[in-house]
Image (tube, one colour):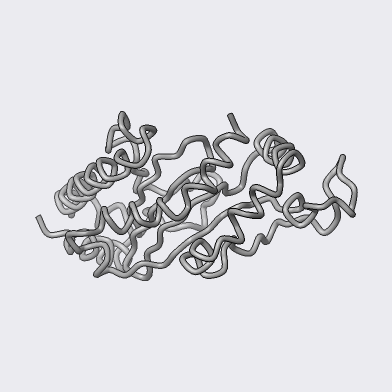
Length: 217
């Protein structure tokens, strides 16, 4: 089955975002979803060759609901205009693939961690921030992810509680997000080698993910 059907469906859904339209095209949604789950399975098989963590994950457990949560965000459209792949190791952390007609990307790291997670990450940075700095300064990592860590709009303006302003790793300790991303094209996604593209991205981000995995353990 052609992966182009994923983008065709999502593009039409974006233009006709309503329950009435979805009900009338439920068969197209189920077909596109099945194609995407099949691709998620191929990605998991590729990732499992690098990391045993991905060996026992069910493809259906990596996808997101197509419905937006309107209870807390009533301004959002009824449905998302993307498919996702999120075999997250913990809430807010891990590898993430976002596929949508406007743009697609592969991301990783820790996004919007809760206070408990953030406390653990900061403790790990305080203990061996030099290791994290080394990961982030790696040339291959920086080249692949356009300079490394993304800008953090939630970064503290002052030092976090319990840490001095002249701490060796204060710039990292002030962060609330530790995320990286790489844009991909529709042609990347529909290509036969897309699982290889994701596996390559994971290989580049793996040192960061392992660091965070150990911090959050």
